Length: 366
Image 1: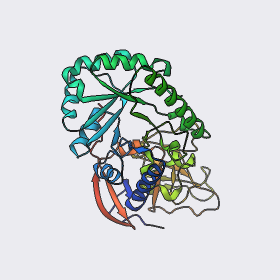
Image 2 (image 1 turned 45 degrees about the vertical axis):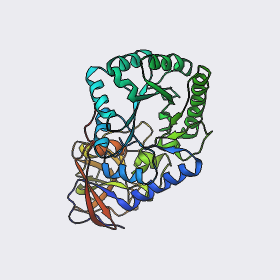
Image 3 (image 1 turned 135 degrees about the vertical axis):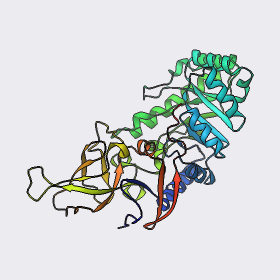
Image 4 (image 1 turned 90 degrees about the vertical axis):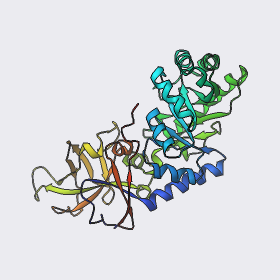
């Protein structure tokens, strides 16, 4: 069992760089084999060094969630960025987009006539340097237009001076047991209908963008020209429970120390408490999840409660309980939250600290 390096204090985020690189290579190879462009979602890791590794492995660009994340990665050398969200581009955001478009090729999501018109109006002559994809709702029911409405939105964008390159969707309903294959089919149907409607209206459809980590490696009907998985690069407890990654694919863990434990035959049962709570693990727990995270080296254990600085773990019967002071590797439920809670991460290889990376886009929420 790889040990937590002695120089790491707890709680701390660790990334196993060997596992990280294997995850990057596996996804890049799968997309190359299928002839689909890979544009990983960098909001998962927010780290320039990881983004650079993904680009070096063949990614055509990076996906981000905000203008701030785009600014961070553009400053770090990323030359092609997609803000995969329907922005409301007021005058202030327009100024930032104009500056950003001088440093990188920028694509933005749009899902309404009003949003397209506002973006074009505030970008002014800068609109010609920003392209858009129309977001279509494929079943996640968060943002995105109905396929029947994509032509009106595309026309509004074009009238506003923006270059319409195609459509995109996020099959977010793939994040539930039994749903990845169904969500993949919904994604394919929505992209095909959006593409058909746009082409019939005279638009060139250069890009149909989709994808999520639960669906990316399932194949599919082939409508998507690019995919945007994010979590695959690090893995987390949600992906493990969804059977979309194995334990050996999990690159990120939180080093934690046992600070309390129940005595044998105690009324509280077989429980230990560690010094890593919601302020480093995040508090995300879908209704279907069996806990607030898992232990990489004891996957049958369950994190049953979180406070700000502590996690309570139910230890499985038959397994030796850890001693006071023992250090454990915890897998967060949702790795994107964990990466937004720390400033730096320790890069580990074969049980030794190799480097330290800044979480450069942490907190870039606007």
